[in-house]
Each structure stands twice: as structure tokens, then as C-alpha cells.
Amino acid sequence: MNIDLPFTYDEVLAELENEDWVNPNTINNLGYDNWDNSRYKAMWPKDEHKCMKQLQELVSSNQLKRAFVDHLYENDPTFVFDWYWTPEEMCKHTIMHGEFSKDMPGFHNTIHTDYRKLVATGLVYLAKENNPDVCSVFYDSKDRKNPIPITTNFGSGWFHGNGNETYHEGWNRTDKPRYSILIGLTLNVTPVPNGG
Image (cartoon, rainbow, N blue to C red; front, side, top):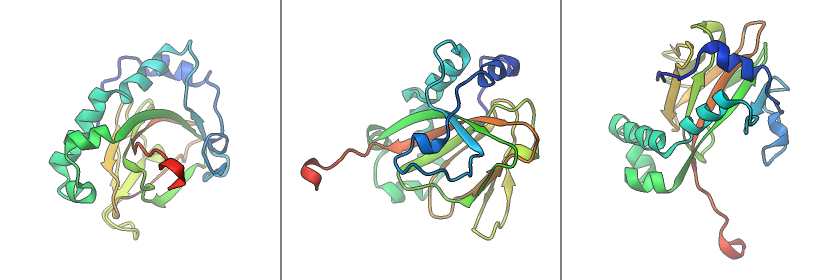
């Protein structure tokens, strides 16, 4: 995908470099860090960071959620069979959200599929230009068949419906942080009353 961001690279970078970044183990339910202290998150940017706040509102909007859901239903023939919901039902049962990531030099998110609460996932690169040393690659299998590297220009990225064969990995092989916005279309899972 390619999003025409309403800010320049330098404007966004200035805020990213002045953000309060936290280890994911401080905000996830398990208290676990899958990336050995090489990935950091900004779930709620500082109030004075207007670019980041607006970008987060954009990727969390119902308008973008509907566009992504419609795209998945129109372009992935297996999607409807994975969920047995209409696009309208999918929108009613999911939350669209965005979080900023700072991936340090040496970061490697090894080959994986996403966990099942994520119906779909995306990533918008906040890099200055295309660079294969900070990209994500998608494959047809866990054996890394048919690699598809993703362009990393400012505002470029990817969005995919999570499935059994949606293998991908990403890295930062540079000496500078890799910044991005991770987008999640997540099931709205509410606890069952009375513990089940």
C-alpha cells in the first residue's frame, strides 16, 4: 500500500526522535519481550506531537477500517471462508488501531504468521527512502518460498489478512532506528460473563 502522508519525512522524524518509547513487555498482557530489547512502542504519542497524533487517528479511523475490510473481501477469496461474516459484520466485530514502532539496529522479527486475534495487520514505513535493509518480506511458505520484499518509501507499506499461510518477517540491518506505524484490525474480544 501507499499512503499519501500529509507531513514531510523531517517533520515526522523530529517527533519520533523526541517520543517516549517503551519496551512492549511493559504494555502487553504477558509481560514478554519477543524482540530481545530491540523493538520499542509508542502507543499514545505525546500531545505536542501533532504529526504522530494525526497519523494515529488516520490509521485508526473507521473510514480506513472499512476500506481495508472491503479490500480484503474483494481480493482474498479465502477471507470470507475464514470468518463467515459479511464485511458489515466484520466491521462491527473489530477495532482498527495504530501504534508506532521503533526497531533498533539488529532487530529481526523472524518468520511468522500473526496471532489469531489479529484479523489483519499492516505496516506503514516512516523511512526516508526505499531500503531493503529495513524491509519486510512475505513468503508463500515457512520455507521462504517466493519472497516478496516490500518497498519502504515514506508512507509505503503493506496490509494483509491474517491466515495460515501468511508468512512474513522484517528486520533492521542498518545503524539507525527503523520507524513505522503498525496497523491492527483486531477482534473485539470481550470476556464471557461469569467466567464462561
